[in-house]
Amino acid sequence: MSDTAIVESARHIAYGIYAWSALLVAVIPALLLLAVTPGRGARRRVTRWFARAFFVSIGSPISVDGATFLPEGPCIVVANHSSYLDGMILTAALPARFTFVIKQEMVSFPFAGFLLRRIGSEFVTREDGRQKDRVTRRLFKAAESGDALAFFPEGTFDATPGLRRFQPGAFSMAWRARLPVVPVVIFGSRAKLPANVWLPVPGPLSVSVGEPIDPDQPDASAGSLLTASRQAMLARLDEPDLAETGLSADSQ
Image (cartoon, rainbow, N blue to C red; front, side):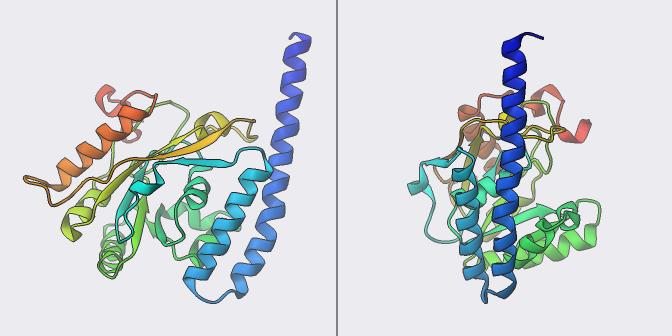
């Protein structure tokens, strides 16, 4: 290994250790505040502030393009998923009124499970049909009452670059509740902290918000909302369509 490579490797290790230390410094007061802060809205604002402060502290402030496309009322945001950082990135980028729909496994993560429950996240598992139906009914009622929802429709991620097959739940809900779907693309998270890597590296992070897709347009359906959202995301995302290649998360 060359001297340059050794220096670069040492720099990345030092940065990664610093980044996790900065997260710990942010998480501890955030958890304490969330434990005593009344009201879901206030707790979400606290979480958003700490998420934004964390990314600024590690030199990767979240830049948001197209924020004016976000409807002021209820809607469904769908975003690509390529890193454990993605949920925190969307928390920093989106208004505090969003409810995140997250896979059930996150409940068991230290600190994260408590934080996600305190800000009113919804947890769903594809394996438990009854639990999934209960969550779907709750989310549908939340949407009808004015909540904005955020999904990662791929459901999971790994180290392979590309957009995986979408699960239909978010789009079925949008069609049934007549909510606009907003396709969002997260840039930089895979490079910063890919799957199976423990230390993040320096690098920019940004979020691009696309134009809402109207569920009331002629011939609209859950399937057409899914297809239109996927096309809008692929048009901006510099990664392949893994659903076409057969390398989706479901097939791995």
